[in-house]
Each structure stands twice: as C-alpha cells, then as structure tokens.
Amino acid sequence: MDVSVKFLGGAGTVTGSRFLLQIGALRVLVDCGLFQGMKDYRLRNWGPFPVDPVGIDMVLLTHAHIDHSGYLPKLVKEGFSGPIYCTEPTLELVKILLMDAGKLQEEEAAYAQKKGYSKHKKPEPLFTIKDAERVFPLLQPLRFEEEYTLHEVLKVTAYNAGHILGAAILKLKVKGQNQEKAIVFSGDLGRYHDPILNPPADIPFGDVLFMESTYGNRVNENAKVSVQLAKIIKDTYMRGGVSVIPSFAVGRTQMILYLLHRMQKLGTIPQIPIYVDSPMAIDVTHLYKTFSHYHHLGPFLDESDANPFLHRNLHYYKTQDSSMSLNHLKGDAIIISASGMATGGRILHHLYNRLPNEDDSVIFVGFQPEGTRGRKLLDGDKTCRIYGVDVPVKASVHFIEGLSAHADQNELMEWSEGFIHRPKMTFLVHGEAESTQALAGLLRSQRQWNPIIPAYMESFELFSGI
Image (cartoon, rainbow, N blue to C red; front, side, top):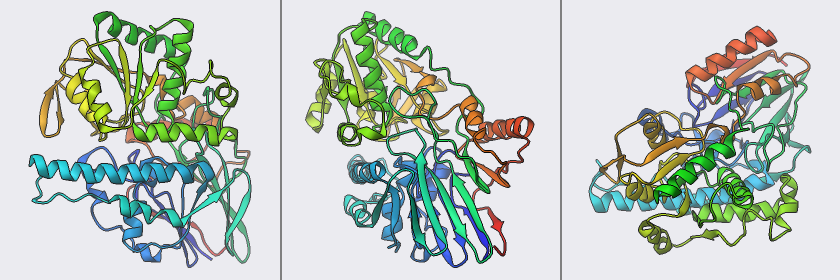
C-alpha cells in the first residue's frame, strides 16, 4: 500500500489548513480551513475545491478555528458526505463558529449590496447559515488519549495541543500489509505556561510529522504581558479614551477576561466596565464550564468572587442594538469584540468609530497574518478601509505579543525534543516564509532533522509498499 500527501493549504501561509492523505484507496482530509489575509489567498476560498469533495472519505480536525474548519460548509455543499472527526469541545465550538461565520457572510453580502461597494452586481456569501447547519450531522466526537479505528487501515488518537479549548495533536496509525506507520499532525500548539490551558502533550514517536511554524522566528515573552496591557489601558483611561481589543472569540477572549479580572482585583487597572461585544464569544465562554476537565480554570469558575467570566464590571452584549450603543461611550471602558484580525464581525463598526479618535486605543492580542486589517494597522497604515470607506487612523495602535495562543520558537523547539526518534520526514506548515525557514534552520542545527518546507498544491510520497 502506498501513502501520499497533497498540500491543499497551510503551506507557505498561516491560514487555509488542508492536508489530503491518500492511504491506498482511502482519502483523508486533515483540517478543512478557510484562507484569510491577502487577497490572492482569499480568492482560493471561492474557486472549486482542488479535488472532488465527493471522493473524500473523511475529515479529521485538529481544532475549531476558522482557518482549520471554516471551509467545511462549502465542502459539504460541493458533495462531501463522510464523517468529520474532532474532539468533544471542538465539535461544539465548530457549531458555534460555523453558524457565526455563515451569519457574517450573509450580513456582509447584504451590506455590500446595499452600500454598492462590491464589484459584483449581487454579492453572494461564501456559505450561508443553512450550509453551516448541514455540517453538524457529520460531526463525530473523539476523546483525548483514546485510540479509535476509523477504517481497516487507519486508527487515530487525539492528544492535548493547548492553543484553544479542545485543540488536538492527531496521531494516525496507518496499517499496511507488511508494516504499521505513524503520522503526527501537531495542529496549532499552545503555550507551555498558559494560565487556562494545559501544555501540549509530548509525542515520542512518529514516522512522518506535520509541524506548525507560526512563531518559528520569534520568542514571545509572556512574563510582562500584564504590565504592558495594564500600562496601555491606564494611559488610555487617563486620556479619557476607550480601549478596544479585537480578539478571537475562542481562546483569546477568555484569556483576556482572565487577565483583566486579575488586574482589576490587584488594582493595576481601574475598575471600569468591560464589554464583551461578541455573541459567539459569549457562547464559547459557557463551554469552559461544560468542559472543565479540558483546562485548569475549574476552581475559579466555582467561586463567584474569583470567576473571570462573571463579575460586576463585566457586561455581555448580544444584540445588534446593544453593540451599536457602545459607539456613544466617550471613555472609561474596555471593549472586546471579534474578529481578532479585524477581517469581519462587530469589531469593524468599533474600529470605524474609534480609529479616528486620538484618545482611544486599539490593542491587538493575536497573530496578524499578511493582508489583514490588523497587520496593516500594526504596520502603520494611516487609513483603514472599512465598509468601503478609508477611515483615518488617529487612535493609538498596540500589539501585545506574549498573548498569542501559539507556541513561540523556544516552545516549538522544546516540543520537538519530545520525539525520542527523529521523524523520517518533517513538514513545516502553517507559517509565513520567514518563520518557517527560521525554524527549519534550528531543527537542522540543533536536532539534526532535515525538515521540508512544502509549497501550495505540492505532493509527496510518504510510504511505498507498506
């Protein structure tokens, strides 16, 4: 039996994770994400899928983030009907994220048509809420550290990856007529000292490794995160401004809430209102209680005075009217809203209203890929195009590096030490060229590995005649 892989995404970029395994006659898609960021990448979402979705037997998801799961509605719409395997929290998160993404797609298409800023006569959503709902019956849950037989030639085990609730490292065992081989997908690896999530599990063996490299070229010190965040919020407060935090609804919002609650308890930031303006973030936050054994925040959630998700300064806004009412705030507030890369969602109307105000601050707390509004703002653009309008940027724009949910260079290298035997093949994925090349250099010099940096649509034979 022969085994090969085709890189349908996640190669040369941090988005669009899609890896197609051909295991004899079996076709397995690992991750099914949307491309984000640069226009050339985003256009890939709109074309036909590179292979016929009808011929794909199953999908395995490492985690729920849209760049790993967001293409599922379109894949199903194009004919895929097999099972989609993921961890229990990921299954629930995928439902929330896809419904929200479908709603946003519909709203943005309608708004573009109303305002006339689309090139198309009738702008269409990439997928709808109904398309998202068609995915749900196909979702199948996995528990951490239990081996599942998915096919006579394939078994899978999910291990904790950190990163977000339910994120998994996937270990696939491929059984040929003569041998059994192990293929490991790191997914997105989390931090080793995260106050909410457990560190990534060590994996001692894998014949082939697919390893993320988002922060392969930088070290993110998280020791000074609270100090940096507190200073920005206090300075904004003293100016009479509002701090706006674009934040991913899954993972980063909950981390920010934890930090803000702790800082208010310690008195390092003022006792001002915190508004979470993201229905999706609110729904996701409830899941931390449901899946308390997937993180170590459980004792905090049981004590009212210690619960970072429920206290007197914290306000959850679900409706569109309540969201719009925040535009009238002149100061003494923190607004957290999605998306974290300012690519869509309610954060856009907050930026539209706040960027022209020099007293306000915008604080980015996660990785900003090339081509996103977040990256352009951090690069110093003087205007930001929102709703077809070039909005002047007068607010202060900041980036708190240590709050990223991705393992940094040191942590990626530490995770690689868990392998007792060097993988025969290591592919570096989910990273921009500079970070991927930097990590590849370290793996060569310090581990004597020989990593491969694949290109989009490139194919490789993994095993022959096993």
